[in-house]
Length: 353
Image (cartoon, rainbow, N blue to C red):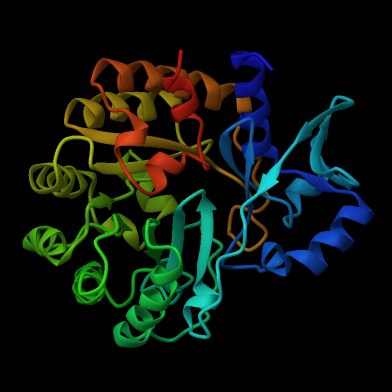
């Protein structure tokens, strides 16, 4: 598969998802019930041709996809335009007998994603981000003693893995940052593994220093929607954090964590492409790794009736970003966690020439 063919293949899968044949659905539901868990994991993480891809399969929009996930005696594969492309799912993590077994998932080889919090302070009808499908499963984040104990048992079995933390913003961005600091301090008592964390920018920017001191190695603060007026419509609660504050927090994070150790996601398909490209210019020059994720109309989000991001548009923006990454020497493999994984976007693939 040529570079151009693969970019279209991956962009199509990200934007359209994959339909399931009756046989593959039955087999997947038996072998991987977590793939169908709504409100937590809305896609399947797989590897195709050495590239990670996060593919929606259990959503209404994916049922109409021209990509079909099948299985035969040789394994799982994507059927597209009568051509077969073999896929590899990531192996299940070893069990610990703790809460971690329900929270931790491999999103890439050697990268574990953990969501300790699903109860978001913005999860109210008048505040919720309209692209979000997260459903609350716990009233509070998992206790840090309980969670760190489970992670300790897990890391004994996979000591070289990266930990990537994400989840809903509990109570407030500042309170969530404090939670992460408390957790990372406990993890650092038994592991020196890379730790990437995804969080909303705290109002108290000294918490960014505290995150570093507690053991975080990468910080991800997602702008998502660039224009402040549009942000108020799409993210009515989270838009209280202005773009200007995001820039201050991201600049501070680069000062603390270093050039290329900070990233931010923008969502393509719900805002003008030129806004995203302009913001990519601003962020990459400042040492922040921009990520462009396509909008997907997940069943449980407010924009479920909206069209998914156009794959061609995603490719055009990502090629633009790929050139910026080369210009500013922001190599994806130098930032552990989501950025290195690259499963939710294609700029890592565009970075390669």
